[in-house]
Amino acid sequence: MAPTSQSGFSLIEMLIASAILLIGVAGILLSVPRAEEGVIAGGMSGRAALYARERLDSLAAISFEELTDYAALESYSDEPEPAVFFRRWWVLAPELLPPLAGEELDEELASYELVAADFDIPRNFLRLKVVLTWQPPGGRLERLTLSRLVTP
Image 1 (tube, helix red, strand yellow):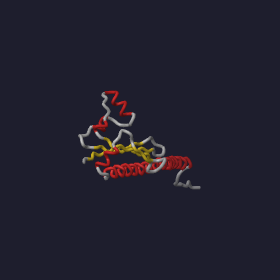
Image 2 (tube, helix red, strand yellow):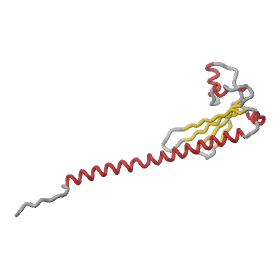
Image 3 (cartoon, helix red, strand yellow):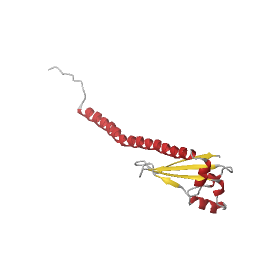
Image 4 (cartoon, one colour):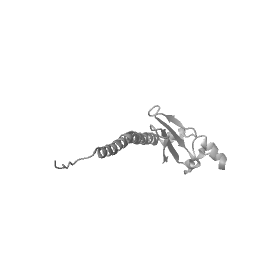
């Protein structure tokens, strides 16, 4: 009998190749939920920017005289998508800055979720400030702040 030569893979080679393939497929399958969360978070960020810009533009469309009636330290708020996005906005005038200084001023403004820089505006100007918060699935709380100065 003449020795025969057989070509092909041995059982061990097939097991090793199968294990490598299994690890690769498992890695891809495990990355799909993360990719999906990223797509959802990106979509939410886009909608958040749209909702914040929408409120800022609607405020800017109001006459200056009427806006001065809304000037206050307290914020106005709504939920463009209930239980998903929370939107707050302020109409700020320089004369609303409390007559305090240092830490007292910072603490007072923090109670309204404002900072002293929000009042760094010239006389006869108003600052429109919009803050939108949301939490994407599996993520941390996100916050977007937009502001605009308006003149008479």
